[in-house]
Each structure stands twice: as C-alpha cells, then as structure tokens.
Amino acid sequence: MIEKITLPNGVRILYEQVPSVRSCALGVWVESGSRHEPEELGGISHYIEHMLFKGTESRTAAQLATAFDAIGGQVNAFTTKENTCYYARVLDTHIQEAADLLCDMYFHSRFGRQETDLERGVILEEIGMYEDTPDDLVIERLSSAIYKGSSLGRPILGTRETLEKIQGDTLRDYCSSRYSAANTVVSVAGSFTMNDIDQIARRFEKMPGGEPLTAPQAVYQPSFTTKTKDIEQNHLCLAFPGIAAGSPDRYRMQVLSNILGGGMSSRLFQRVREQKGLCYTIYSFSSAHRDTGYFGVYTALGRSTEMQALELIGQEVRAFAQEGPTEEEVRRSVEQLKSSALMSLESMNSRMNANARGEFLYGHPLSAEDIIRGYDAVTRDGVHQLAQELFKLPNASFSAVGKVSSQEEYQAVIRAALC
Image (cartoon, rainbow, N blue to C red; front, side, top):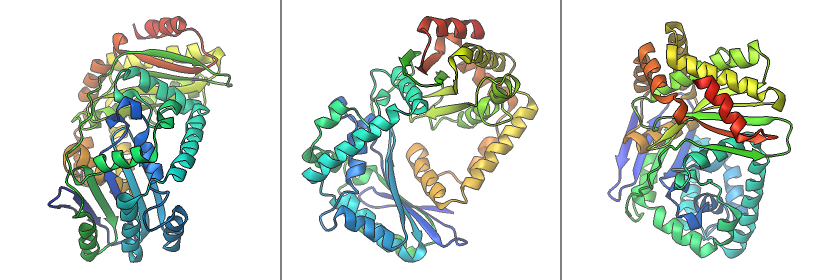
C-alpha cells in the first residue's frame, strides 16, 4: 500500500513498503523543469541538476562520489520539462546514509565559481552529443516547432548563449527560489522501516514553505521542420495532437499507440518493415505534459525509400482513423500494456518514479489496481473515436533530419496519404 505524509511546511512524503526485497529507492523530486524557466535562463534547471553533485558546504564532489560508492549506492538525477529528480537505490541497511547525502546536496550545494565554469563545459559537450544523435534531434526539433513561442518548446539543456550568462550566484538564487517545500515530493519504495521515514521527515520539515510553481500554458500548433545533416539515414517523425499526461484518455492513447507502432506485431512494424523492408526501426509514441501533448511516429531510412515509407505511414494512420482497430488488436494490446506496467513494478526505482509522478499529476499515486482498471476499461469504439479526433490532415506536423528533401515534397506525400 502507498502511504502519504504531508509535513506542515508542505513537503509530501510518499512511501511504499515491499517486504520481499532488500533494496530501497529514495527520490527527491522538485516540480521545477525547463518549462518553468524564463527564456534568458534556458537550461538552468538542468544546470542545477549537474551542480548539486559538484560539492556542498561539507563535502567535495569527490567526497560525495566516494560516500555513495562506500554504501554500494546507485545514484543519479534527471531533468524533464516539468520536474527534476535526485535519486539513490541502496540496500535497506544504508537508507539513512543515502538520505543524508541526498539532503546535503539538496539543501547545501555550494555552486562554486570554478565548479560552475567546469560544469558549463560538460553541459556544452552534452548539447553537442545530442546534436550528433539524429534520432533525438529530429524529435527535439519537432517539439520546438510544435510549441514554438512557449517555454515547453525550448530544449531542456539550454543553449550556448543562455548557459554562458549563468553564473554561480544565478544558480544559487534560482535554486533557492524553486527548491521549496511546496514544490518538493520525497518518494520511497522498497524495504525500510517507519523509523527511516520519520528520520527522512525530520530532515525535510525545516524547509521553507514557498509557493507552488505554475508554468506558462502551451498549445499544440501544426508545424513542419527540416534540417540538413550529412548522415547516412534520414530520420523522420510524423505527428498529430495528443493528450495531456493526466487526461482520462491516457489509457486509450497508450492502446492506440501500441496497436499502431508499439511492437513487432504493430501495424506500422508489420507493414513498413516486415512486408516492405523499408526500414530497420519504426515506432509510435505519445509525448504528454501536464496540459498538452502530441502523438508521433518515428522512423529512419535511406533517402531513396523515405517517400514510400512516409506514404505507407500516412495510409496506416488514415486507415486507423477510418476503420479503427479490431477487437483482437485491442484485447492483445491491453494485455501487453498491463503486463508491461505491472512487471515494471518489480523495480523499486520504477515504483518510486511512478508514485512521485502520480502525486504531481493526479494528487495521489496510482495503485496497480488503478492501472488494471484503466486498461480494462478501454474499448474498441473508444480507441476508434480518439483516432478520429486526432488524426486529421490539418493537425499533422512533421520533422526530418538528414539529407532531406524539400518541405513541399514531404507535405505533398503526407497530404496524398492522409486524404
């Protein structure tokens, strides 16, 4: 059972005991991501994530690393458009040591000038790495175009121009203003005692309360973008409006995506790869945020076959909107997704992540029973109706990276396939 404590200052602590394991996953989450940033400070949330590992008032970066290694801990962090998370997975005998280290980072990071300058270089190299990863780049450019003019459309990593202006004092002040009790959720899953939870609560009860953050609204806008890059394959992504992360339609959307491009039995995999041999990789996905989202189909292939593949993708999308799925496809997809969701709960990190995300999106974590009920409620007609609402030519967006054709050529193929 997932339990929740809300401290007087507003910090929420979620905990789920799993007695059959010996490990514990502990995550400290803050509702502060790239979409909360002002334009001139683009990338600062991710910058702070890096800097929290670079030394505190009582420990150097090397001492932090050594301390985590000494308890056999797996520690990491990540920044998304809407959250930042610092987490550790340790044996249940080392929970308090892990909590002490994470709290030291969360409360007492130094943001020293030398470390700030060094880490800026590391992040610039990270940006360069993504620029050289076309499957990431094509989707990043799609998102930037769809949400152009909104903070949601800006890259999580920021840009060289914004990062060069960010100094240690800026990082410290921004962190102090955002990392407040009102925006903090602590999630614990695995083997632990109530004494462990009490001690964690005492660590967080002194945090300043603060005010919950709000992000500027973002709205999907149909967009086309292409980027020439001297690589062997062209990377393509066709997209349509999706749903918000907390939408009651999320189970229908996952079933829809799974049928179209979620696995080896999916329509797109069978038609484009297995029957025509046009690509190695093809899949569909749903990108969902608090208030908006989009549905995408990605593939990578040579220029000589890209138009044929794009035409087939458009035809499959149109057929799905017109005819809908079969009862067998829905049944099979529901079972696949339930199995995947429930098997992921065997990972303590997955439980910790899912519980925190549920708290942010719905005000409470979702239980395994909630997930099963959600999938079991999906019907063929419901999936068909959602496809009809989303898959319309005026709503289509497209992104291509590689030795690309003209935008007009892509538009003509998509128009012919969807009409």
